Image (cartoon, rainbow, N blue to C red; front, side, top):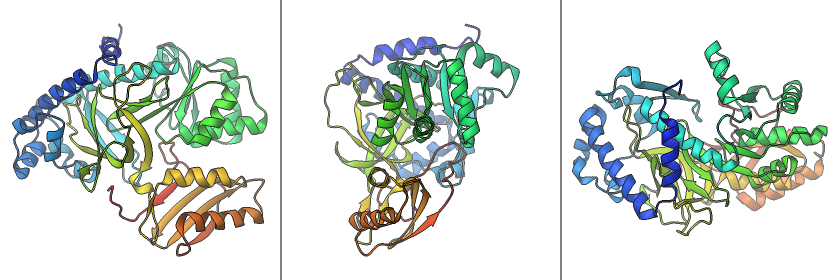
Length: 435
């Protein structure tokens, strides 16, 4: 009430929409799409010129299938045209600036209008409630660069409403994690929330040090791919279910796992496509994830290539009651695919799962590909590291990449997270069909 924000009304509407028949959801999305396209072409120089160059008019974009006429929006295009993408009829006072960390080392800046921010706020809360948490309940946040104490207003807001207790993931050393564990013992959180791998690192720290006593009702994992071995460890140590969430700074939440274990797409805010070689792929096939933000009128994002690869599930009803389509698998970033000398593309996620489960002597590992026939394995050695570990690495490399792929080992003390707190397990700088 103090903030005079409509996000609670938005929350109620979103929770009603989750029960709509899929045909009604599709009609709602396409109605919003038509309004967004008209607005973008009338109020931004970028989309006016883009549509003219492509030989299309706003009236030709009537359904989701018609979106295939519109060229993709890339990060490079945003960097080159940001000023031309901002809508003329949205006051600058209603624009919120966002900045991503940039997985390739180059950050990205964009704007979101305030109404879109408040809509997305209500949407996110609706999905977060699937974890067992509700507004005002305490959160243990394992998160990079916490900003809740920048001024007294933010401090007071966090104290009374947000109620986050932070572990800065840029300082995940022994004293910091012990202090965080102590805070959570005194102020028990209803949920833990954080980057998937950071949650796993804190979980492993607790287990190795024999620490316990934290009993959340649920855990929300976000921003990174949650591997099966990480989920199993986190659920074992804390004794509760992990809710997996997927999104990005540019468009916020993209998909969230429901209580029945299905990752529903965020149809409240987005239209999501899956493409390969710039063409739609059928359900069940991997494709680059392309999103259209239906709510951001301040700086429209139409057919934005997120930079990740995923698979849409073959349509089936979910026992949770939500009618939204399901993301069957998130296969990682476009840049996380390794290419073998034989031309085979291997998902970085499958590599991480494979190597992590079969190399108990390795605490952390990062695979880097600069050339088609050569890899670099960065290793953080664990207590069980031995000659057998080296033999296992060689065996796995032969199995996964073939005998034409050479590799070298680099031993490091740690594999640092990015400024955002995320970790990259696999980095390939070679082109692939999902780019």
